[in-house]
Amino acid sequence: MTDILPMEPCSICTEPVERHTESYCNACGRLFHLNQREDLPGKDCGSVSLSETHLALVFMCSACGESAESPVSPALEAVLDLSEAALAAGMSERELAEAAAAGRVSHRRTAGGSLLFEREAVEALLRARGPA
Ligand SMILES: [Zn+2]
Ligand SMILES: [Zn+2]
Image (tube, rainbow, N blue to C red; front, side):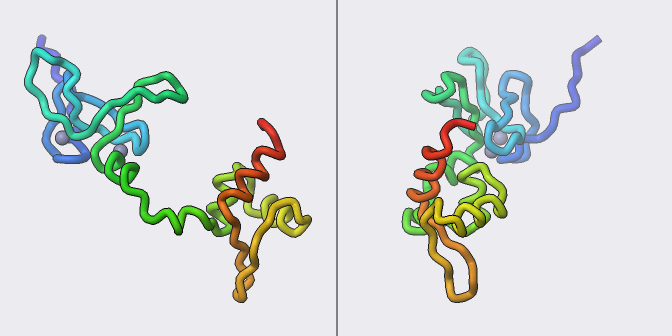
């Protein structure tokens, strides 16, 4: 009896993934090639690195690796809208809007009525709340 697995194709190059190159991206969860055997030929469609914060191996497909290495724009990153800021702060949009209304986080209100937050202000709010 041979051991045949229903191998899914690699999400990067769409070729079948062998058992020794089977890796799952920690960012998007998709299957990709990463040769884990030095003695066997195999493709690399991503990379693996050691996370210093979690002391664990982090698998990253090349699609996610590229987007992680080239952030869209530092200027864009510095200002968050309500939903982005709520995500960053781990709060609901309503909680964050209330915190802004109560003056607990510095913010700006656009002419259209949207709330904008500086990343630093959100991080300061997080520090003020302490660990959840
Ligand atoms: Zn591949
Ligand atoms: Zn990925």
